Length: 327
Image 1 (tube, rainbow, N blue to C red):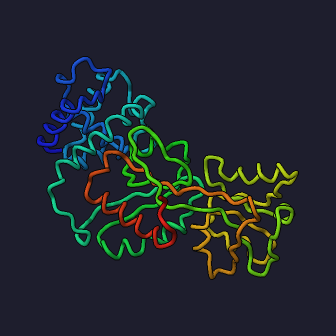
Image 2 (image 1 turned 45 degrees about the vertical axis):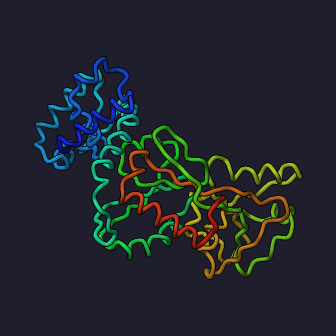
């Protein structure tokens, strides 16, 4: 990174009294360029790619890594396959340094005008819980049309690795049907959802809780135990669900329901994408529906970056086409 960015890092650390490294006795004696190398290694997980990213030679990165290991008294990165993997200590440090460096980069570039048609950025979307990729990919076409030079990567990860993911990788936002709270992150609700019943169009309608308990269910976990609330309500009436299949998301659900009496309880936001695919969307019997939000989270360091602000705004606008925003 440029020297100007390093100077701004020092200024902002002192001005805001960010104790990024409480384990260091004297921040002024620390070469902050090492922090830039650390952040790049966390993103790239490969010494060669890190060197290419920072426009330096591989020996320079190796030398910086040796100094970092001495500084923090920890290996930090361990060889793994064709790259490196961070230690627990490195992950802990990344939660502190990642957002700080991203904020500084955003501050340095904030005076640069942003034009979507000229943007060449890469954005990452991570899906947690039962959020379906079909839902998300359906929102991306108009975004790609407005900025043809961008690229978007969509992936699903274990919700338990949220902190590592947002601290260490180039993830623009994460989506989940549960509160996405963690240190160094910002979050907001972007859509209010209700649980609805989905069945094949040629299957019988579910008219009561008893009818619901008699049908074979395809279970799609929302995350944070939200899908268990229905079971708790049925249990109070002495009923239970017959689980035929459990999926990670509603992707491809229409094929699993076709030609059967199976039913699935999913968010209405997801169900709307199945309309016209041989399924019927019904309200659940009285008292069984749940209300919850679709949440979006992102790193604090990406809060001010012009391209990231634009991307989040575009995503929210596309979601609002399908459902009102929560108030």
